[in-house]
Image (cartoon, rainbow, N blue to C red; front, side):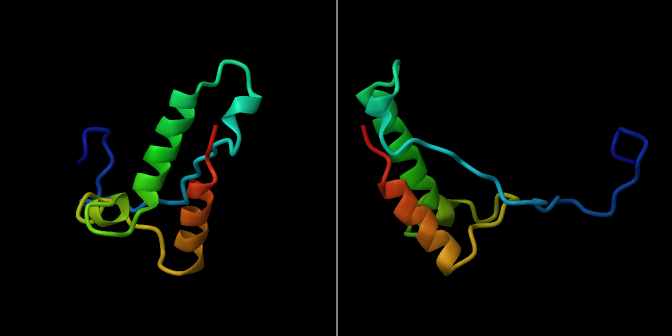
Length: 86
């Protein structure tokens, strides 16, 4: 039992769907947005879609989540991440 009265057979739970992150391409067009907020969004999203060593896609391995599928999906996510600006 897992504490809810429901028995489970899995120790890890797969992600059921893709998770989406939305960000502006031009933060300066919105009141209250700052260059710092645009930089933070850019840095964070570029990190999580980075497939290189010490990038988010590399570091997620072994932490109960799956990396983005190789190919078009991860390539488009990486392209989109570079468009975030102030």
